Image 1 (tube, rainbow, N blue to C red):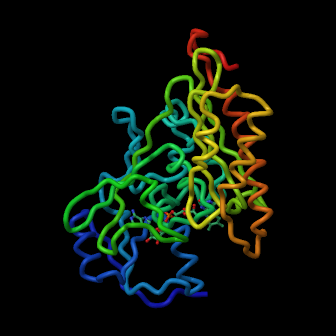
Image 2: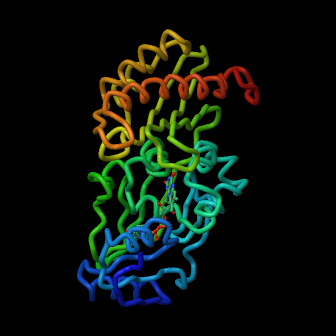
Length: 298
Ligand SMILES: Cc1cc2nc3c(=O)[nH]c(=O)nc-3n(C[C@H](O)[C@H](O)[C@H](O)COP(=O)(O)OP(=O)(O)OC[C@H]3O[C@@H](n4cnc5c(N)ncnc54)[C@H](O)[C@@H]3O)c2cc1C
């Protein structure tokens, strides 16, 4: 199908983009990679009065390490992140999640901030942002504000972004030294959105016990979420199958997936537990006991 008619603007500065968003008062959409927006237009599921194409605004494509955070500009493509040595070194969880985002052609064009703004609850990047307490940076008529990922996602495809705001970037704290990580997912076909996905980070103490665990989930509710009960249970425990089993049961209790044409609620719930077990096990195997002198996995 063809999209409905829309006005097209390609501003050359953020001020101009914000001014255009204000002018259309919520009736305009930002166009970044177009990998979600263009299909929505073609299926006529979105009918904006205007598209504001941010691709010609300079300075939005930088991927840098600033302090303890990876800073990702609004035009950083999935592929750039996937290929980045900086990301592999400082945020291997994100690097691992990238391979699950659609197909190479989609990753070539789609942006990380587009994925965050689109807020598909089954998308991988929002789950990573929630797992690692990332932030997004929004710019509107009043200037720039930073929003924690935990507060950004409201429900299916809905965020706290105002209609007069756009994302200019997003920040992701890098993993603490020695932390282990894993991103696991089940999708119906490779490249599809997740039926369920789990992002796990495990930090060990000098005795080899779990100092801190983080679990971010996608596909099991209206927003990406943390399994806080399971995380609290894991602190201070011995890593191992018995611990993972109990944590997985807690994850299953915590999530509230809806049924849809792809999977029932009960299936998604069980899948979340199975994937949490796998992810925790892999993350713990990659974690390093601090007193071991570093460098070696367990
Ligand atoms: C066949 C197919 C399979 C896919 N599989 C997956 C998958 O498995 N996992 C996954 O996560 N994604 C998947 N995608 C989506 C893809 O990853 C998109 O690239 C991503 O979701 C959105 O990024 P984009 O830059 O293309 O955003 P766009 O399509 O340009 O925009 C998406 C939405 O976000 C808004 N937006 C974009 N950038 C900004 C900004 N800076 N500020 C404010 N609003 C903004 C737009 O207005 C629009 O509402 C798939 C897409 C296709 C076509």
